[in-house]
Length: 95
Image 1 (spheres, helix red, strand yellow):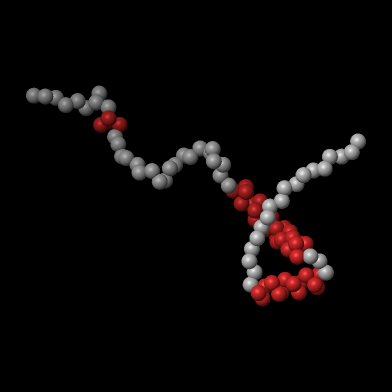
Image 2 (image 1 turned 180 degrees about the horizontal axis):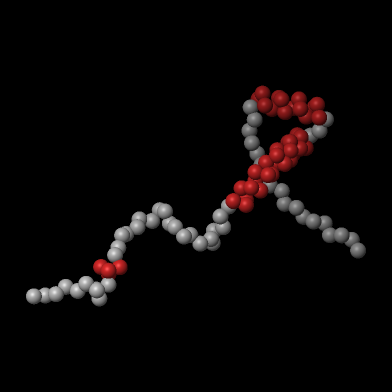
């Protein structure tokens, strides 16, 4: 039975380099004897590996959207008295 080929989606990223950065990139490509994409991906992977612990820590600290909020600090609170709201304790007497 032949295995099914997995389709992978790729995203296109474009960015601009200055002339000096481009020249340096070309020298690095010649030194590594590789292509532009392979060189960029190689160093991106290395950078991602360095950032991975920080990203995992950040993900663990994220608050879920459906988490209960006990205190809403942005809401203006109104001070009220239970005794004023309920008239059964203090009633006004008309004379």
